[in-house]
Length: 393
Ligand SMILES: *[C@@H]1O[C@H](CO)[C@@H](O)[C@H](O)[C@H]1NC(C)=O
Ligand SMILES: *[C@@H]1O[C@H](CO)[C@@H](O)[C@H](O)[C@H]1NC(C)=O
Ligand SMILES: *[C@@H]1O[C@H](CO)[C@@H](O)[C@H](O)[C@H]1NC(C)=O
Ligand SMILES: *[C@@H]1O[C@H](CO)[C@@H](O)[C@H](O)[C@H]1NC(C)=O
Image (cartoon, rainbow, N blue to C red; front, side, top):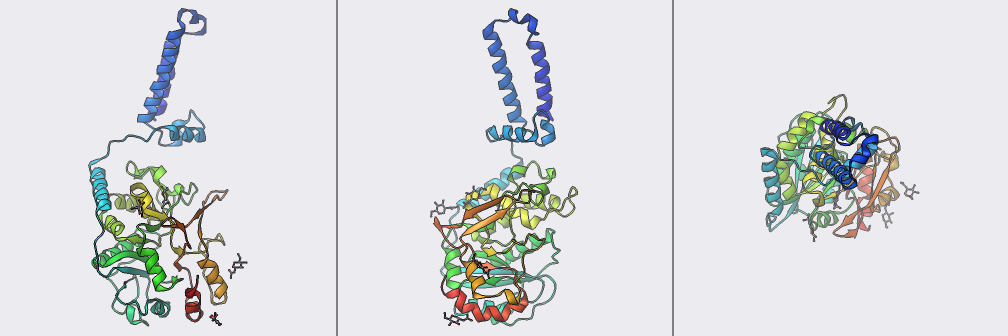
């Protein structure tokens, strides 16, 4: 609004300052240039201080011209509020602290489930022989799980209700992280669902996650209705639309990042209040936007931007493909484990596809360690194939 007012003022000034055509002769040439240059400067200064926040406020340009125009401007100076300054120093300090030394570093496997985990037997094969290098946490939101693997017995944490699409999903993730952080040996944290299966053997997964300094958090810009279309202006001033990101919720996170998530209340609250089903008439899902946006704002180079959990969206339906017993073959698993590029597709009409090589410590590597969504009926086939498909990549 301020921009357009300033512009209109500018126009009015211009009419006053610039004499009508017939009087041009009265104004000497240099004066002309000075006036013009000052007007352009004034306009730039005003737009710099009060950048257009909605496309409606820049009606003087077509929307796309307006966006192009505002992207020319240098990064915007905005005076941070007290809680933003506090948040920013806490995050910066945590990022600069050396990681906690551990004599027996472990990976925390955090399972988010409704009740029993259908793939416990498969995970049991995965964990066997690696005692002391992993710990398991289960958040069973509804039913008490029945265990088929000794590694999973008594690993449930106190859980809360999880309603699909609401912030309660993020709350469950935070509850798992908090419990897993209690063990100082846990250095990397993996979030998994009850339909997830391992794609590699334990050593491969351990080395992949431990010997890198990034978190595998999925994050991309989706200008479409299922991306930025879910953004609410209520998130201002802390979360600007240009920072809004989307990504699958299945992350792996280094300890430092897990602590930062625990420390955050400011951005969490913004997403809890303004990214929810039915917000401003659209359905926003905090579990798909909070962490991607938060880390994009505070540590963009600390996250890989893809998730190490594979999922097949190629059918372009509301839900990803669920693998049935008849789908399981050595070839399918070979196909998934040989993928070395991550693919993101935007939700606009033109469905733009973005392909990015999966870079691990500067090397192009296979992207995936885990996969979903596997139906319980695939368990026996997966067990039969496990040692085959995990042996050689
Ligand atoms: C990760 O380590 C590499 C060198 O091994 C370094 O260049 C990079 O800045 C580090 N990244 C982060 C987020 O610490
Ligand atoms: C992830 O994407 C952001 C831009 O959104 C970029 O700045 C960052 O470097 C990317 N991370 C890696 C590890 O490439
Ligand atoms: C595996 O990939 C090949 C080559 O892209 C494809 O032709 C084949 O159908 C895939 N098989 C399965 C089971 O997905
Ligand atoms: C596993 O691999 C071995 C040798 O590569 C092969 O003989 C066997 O048939 C495979 N098993 C299955 C279930 O594919």
